Length: 129
Image (cartoon, rainbow, N blue to C red):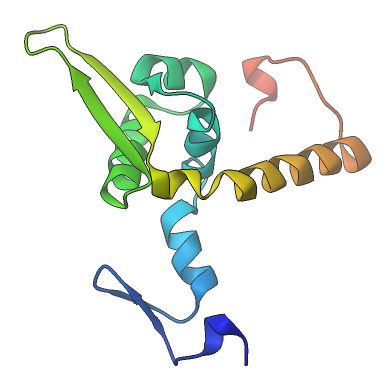
């Protein structure tokens, strides 16, 4: 029997999942979570840096996804200073860093797909999905 199928379900933080893939996708699934984690994998970033690098994400979506990733323990939000303007920096937690090999594998797979079935294009907003 496979490890992910030892029990009938998997439980984490009060949530029950049918398998470990479902658990993992709840933590990093969706259009933006993995992208945010990818941008944080090498160094901490400020909110404005993430927004600039991710071009097509809305401020509201980025804010919500950062809060969810923080709640799930994948990133940490550190505030510097007590009076406005404060500096807020996001970085991967040790738990979040365990995801880096998977992010690198997803990146390599995406590059392979682009090379074989698509094409790399200039970085203009009308071409970004």
